[in-house]
Amino acid sequence: MIRVTDEAGLRTVTIDRPDKANSLTGEMLDALIEAVEGAPGGALVFTGAGKVFSAGADLDEAKAGLATSPLWERLSHAVAVSDALTVAALNGTLAGGAFGMVLACDIRLSVPTAKFFYPVMKLGYLPQPSDPARLTALVGRGRARMILLAAQKIEAAEAEIWGLVDRLVEPEALMGEAAGLCEAAMAANPETRAGIKAMCRGVTVPGVIAGGADQPSSD
Image 1 (cartoon, rainbow, N blue to C red):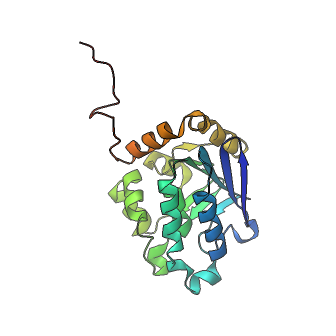
Image 2 (tube, helix red, strand yellow):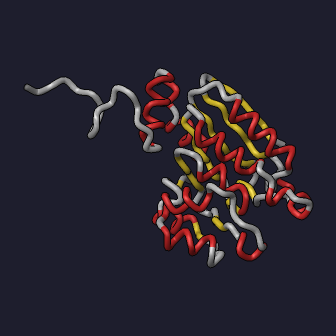
Image 3 (tube, rainbow, N blue to C red):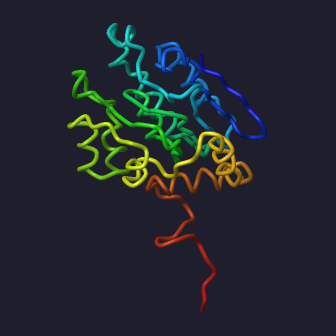
């Protein structure tokens, strides 16, 4: 139900349970974590089979405790700290717990028909610990509250305007666009890629002066 393919430094991870709207079980979360933590570097693309990226937690397992499992946070953390360029290629709607891994990605692409909703307020759960801060960093406080507190469903076009997704791509071009965005990261040396990723997270990188990369003096 989680398919992993590796090709020339690009790992593609596909959620493959379209008959259940790609809802995630505990076993699938374990497989996703393993796929991220074991990635060979370069670039990592997440996508889904069918017309939905993921509906979040499997309903039966959610009722049995999966909705509040630490596996969700472990997955999003693994994505966030990965040295690979991480791209979410959203082939359709993103809902619930699946938000965590997507918010932790470096880049988010989406088909124009996707919808975005995180209905924890309606379901009586708290969101994953890191999700509100990551969501707020992307869309701002008011819009994060629209999604989390008001439980609003956001269309893809609005999600792009808000900054929740970075680019809308037609379905037939989605994976090609994702692969194209990964080319520079796959060609870069690991230290450069990891350093730039760290700087984008606000982490100080040794050897880089305030205000920009080291440059020769103009004096």
